[in-house]
Image 1 (cartoon, rainbow, N blue to C red):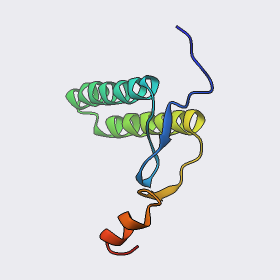
Image 2 (cartoon, one colour; image 1 turned 45 degrees about the vertical axis):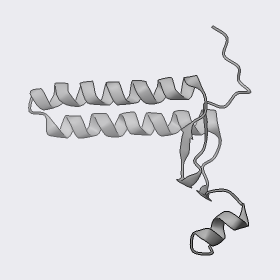
Image 3 (tube, rainbow, N blue to C red; image 1 turned 180 degrees about the vertical axis):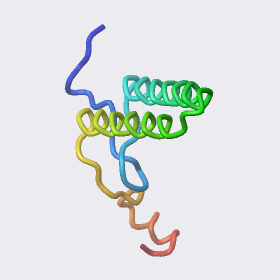
Length: 93
């Protein structure tokens, strides 16, 4: 398997702040995050460890944000395309 460092795993979202998966690697990371957080949360909640479940999900989320930042660049606020016709249809902003 060849990993191309020039291909971003995450790109800017079209609307809002943050990242969205831009390649199969990005989608794999998001899938692993979802599966791991659900499995870990269930494991901790079955043992009645609510605090541990919260800490677990927070640590996974921080790890996901770090991976997005490293493989996708800095986040920025975006509000769709820069097409003015698109903006005028939606409130003129």
